[in-house]
Image (cartoon, rainbow, N blue to C red; front, side, top):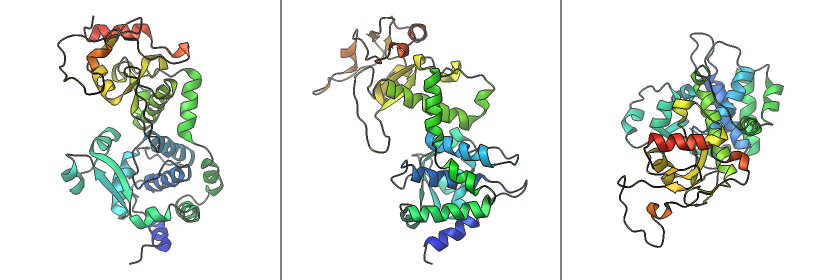
Length: 317
């Protein structure tokens, strides 16, 4: 069987969807989102990550074009689209058997734990590199699943919901969420991703601890936006509750291997780790008493009360 544009047009028009409570729109919305991210240049390799960008733009299409009472859970189509035989999942180490056995995964956190990324048939991925093929497949999706929304969906392709969330957070300096708001896992995941990306930008993509700055293609970054007071407890995405840290020092900060005092000096308590002498680089202990790298804008300096809480929680003095 030749897997050409006609083959995938039929696939897109005849997706296997749940019809128990009316036609479930999850799969068509996810595919619209993937096509949207191809258009915006987010997807350059045959690796589709369950990213904040994907989630935010999935919600963009969902809230604008779904009128049914189905719940907007991106984990459902991301997992179940494998049943249409052109969407495949790359498991994280240790989850190979679960993915092979098609154990149902229904929540966003569980899916992110089990799956590294999704990938398409090589033939479909090649087709999606061409704007004309993307346009034709988008038209097929609209005609089959949203026949009265064509013009509106075309307009939605013109803006990026994730960028809009980032700008909204930036304008407000971040946000603190209520317990009720946390029930929308998809929305909080997208907004938390926007918080982390903005923190990294505020620090010019530099680790506040070791000052490393490495930026890769496809929006990949060696540096993370870290919370000082944990989000799970305080629900605090204000930028002053953030630090830009490389992945190693983010991990160490979250485990109390170092703290930052009110003068923004790094403090490293004794007895919590050992390290071998680094070759042509500095070990963690060499940074004791140094000042962290800070944002250019003093409005975004780390909150001193948050830093004090972290020091006291981990008993750093």
